[in-house]
Image (cartoon, rainbow, N blue to C red; front, side, top):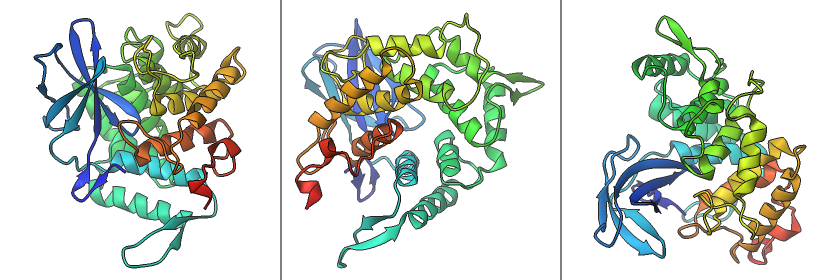
Length: 340
């Protein structure tokens, strides 16, 4: 759904907190804080400066208490969508349908689809892979180029071993772990950096709303890390905070205390919490999240957030799979259109 002839068009949301307007890009389910600007009727456009978006211009469209932005030029990075695809096909067995112009319905094997996606990542970025590239390649059973860990070390040396947001720490932890490195001891100049500590001792873990907590849980559940019991944010504390943000309708919003639940955030929360089912209240929260997702499925079987798109549907499949639910067989998720 997000594909266009010349690339991928990201979905961007503006959320208003106090006197500040904050733009978030929806990329692979992760909410990336892009920029801030003056809130109010006069704020009709904003130039976003972010390394992924190259300062592209966006137009704003008011939508209730929030503002929707649509990029005016095509975004040509495919890597994060490929992550979703690699994760999706790694969870599904058998074959998946594929369609070609001028041809009938055919089939492609999952191993071949994974091979093609991995080859695309390697061909586009070569040795200069991103954190998500590293994660996707590892999920596909491919070797992550050694240059990736070297690039992380160089980046840490350059930024003094610190990132600005907790999702930065979480993303790099996932990438380093996937590449066979130790996120608790990443070389940086003459010393090393404990990226995991950047999560559990973060002063801004909730500054990105539920997204920060979700990605922190995903990162911390990816390995056996040494987390002090007196840390600011143990996994138990993050889980408790995330459970407290769940809306009464069963879904999760982006902003803490937000009234509007979202497909991507709810699916991601279900997936992140699935690693902590033994904690009090988690299974009940997962169940209510799954029910909310089922109630928001489109008639054709897909899911919509800022319009129907394949990424949101993939997020739901990932969340259900993590919760131990087979999206292909669960009765609540089989729409009439999907079973024809």
